[in-house]
Length: 177
Image (tube, rainbow, N blue to C red):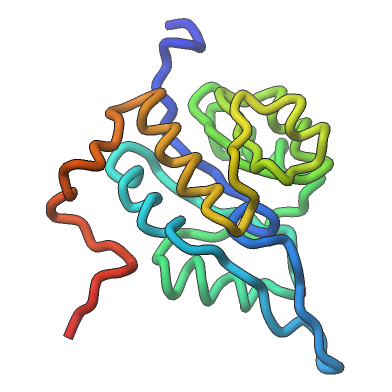
């Protein structure tokens, strides 16, 4: 089977600059906050039936903040992987022709060149955007992941139908009592 006919099986996402604005908020005690955007979690839940979804961060000092949002709140796996070791980590854990990766940094271009499909937010590093298969119109932390999810659904699986509310899914905006 050729690379283009293989369905992707994993969506790997960088956290800082993709799920967040990329800004870190510090006090005299150190890193205290990250700004995560709206709608990304709901869009990921639309994509979850089709792909394994996993997050990567190289932010060791802000790992607990990221873990709270990604693992505890959103219920997705998260790995601490240096930005310069991402390609090695991906090749050790997945078949690169089955990987979609969304990143924004200066080292993500190396990953983008070797995987099945690469996505960058509009405010990504110029080299990341140059080697991305798709660049979102939205910035990281401002619905870029939601836009990417809808793009992946349309390109590889089944386009999202905005006229029909998906059934049987829990979305981040749902209230439970």
